[in-house]
Amino acid sequence: MKLVLLSGGSGKRLWPLSNDARSKQFLKVLEDEQHQLVSMVQRVWGQIADKGLSENSYIATGKSQVEMMQTQIGRHVPLIIEPERRDTFAAIALTAAYLYSEQEVGLDEVIAILPVDPYVESRFFDEVKQLENVLHATEANLALIGVKPTYPSSKYGYIIPSGDQDGDGYRDVNRFEEKPSEERAAELIEEHHALWNCGVFAFKLGFLIQLLEQKGLPLHYKELLKQYHTLPKVSFDYEVVERTSHIVVRPYEGYWKDLGTWNTLTEEMGNHLIGKGMISEDSINTHLINEIDIPVSILGLSNVVVAVSPDGILVSEKSASPRVKDFIDYNQGPMFEERSWGWARILDDQHYDDGRSVITKRVGILQGRNISYQLHINREEVWTIVKGEGEFVQNGNYMKVRAGNVLHIPMKTLHSIRAVSDLEIIIVQSGNGGEDSRIVELYNTWEEVEEHCTNM
Image 1 (spheres, rainbow, N blue to C red):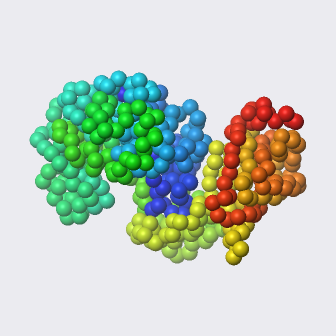
Image 2 (image 1 turned 45 degrees about the vertical axis):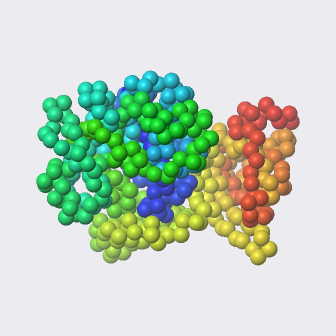
Image 3 (image 1 turned 180 degrees about the vertical axis):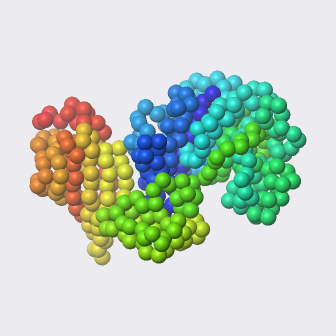
């Protein structure tokens, strides 16, 4: 069986820590067994590896998430990269084409799909393994996992099974009901033994390849990539699951939670305080997550979450926190990014009437890492190195640099830097604030830079 994790979306309900460059699954706010802070994707990948599933697992993700995914779980994990976001149907169609044409996976092979960020016990993945046996035993088109509800919730979709549970642990699916009221959910649970739809399902590859053929879509990955922008922006549930006959579900009775909002995420956080600040003793069930260097103090406020990042500050009563997505202007670009080589934080962003913009950043480059060999079309930069030592190349000319050095990089000048020790640089960018502030990258690795720059 092949396992595919879907990693998409920006997690807007976890603003200001999540943004288009750093989605919710990358936030390091959970604790592992060693009490180290880990992200949702790191936690799930560790569980998959512990169950012996990682060797046959893939992650489908957008191109904007590739660097962070490789930074958090390694470059060895195979990625299926979407050129743009087009919801789960397009992502799964691309995955099927990739496995079929690039990996030569057989049509009878079972493919299991699940979100990249469920908060579950490790034994949940034993249930995922069983989907392969269920499909072969039933010859169903789809096999799902449904979580037995612990309370009537209006936040989840429901799977309505029919008949009694088979001795092999599965039931036929009658229909689905999407996010009913709490009263209706209670009725579905009581009268129909309804299950939460946790977004986990499996199918034989041939089922989806046949579906792509019926829709006139390419079966080869590279061809489907070219047409990806034409695929409908719809969910796999709507486009496929709700229109498919002969679906079975395997009930799961165990811990499962969607950590998509601050109130659910904080329930699983080991620390009430992350970052600089303090919470008074009379602030009950209150959490503070602070990513900036300015301390934050919370006095006498209970059932509150305070989240602080370069993107903004959220102060919310926990039950109200999901509403943040309706109030925030997401057109602002991300003020903090994690990259494969380190991180970048915008300190100041000014735009002037004559069209110029001046952006000041603090950039950290990890020891042994480097930025690409690049040039800016219509922007110049001044770098002040404030920490560490590095190797700097400009138009093929090499020099060693260290804290205290100031470097001027004119427009259309090729440059790169590699950190001999952890580097921190204050970068002031100035130039045209429009689309002409593009970057042209020639080489990504330092080995390529050394090979092509003759003066090193």
